Image (tube, rainbow, N blue to C red):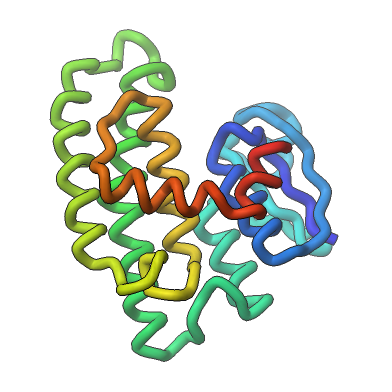
Length: 194
């Protein structure tokens, strides 16, 4: 059985949602960043951590990609053109959306006050709005980024949309509708209820 360590209202949610999508059993330990429970596995103190046979895996994207590959779901096989496209979408979401939200969070409450630059958020909001359009332009014909099949890229993109909503970043109508469809999934609802 897998064990997930990390607070639900962090990137840990991505891992919980992935496990719910896969229908796998797991144990969850709700632990905040930089607490002894996390530092035991990740010296940076960041969450989440997934334990597989007591072996720690860190970084939410690494974890959900590992789970997708291991269980052959929510991904395309390595070495295929579909996987290359999926990986390109995943990297785009991480580089152009997740990184923007993380930088905004750092300058809002994570960095020491004397290191914060709140004025940077104006440009970050502009970047995030612009990236939504680029992502939606690359979307397949179905309800998901790759078309008819949900992948790890969708979990990341929807989590960024959730994060943006909480952070009062604007969502385009198209991106908001896409995220709403994903939030309607039973696996998402189960993970959110944790």
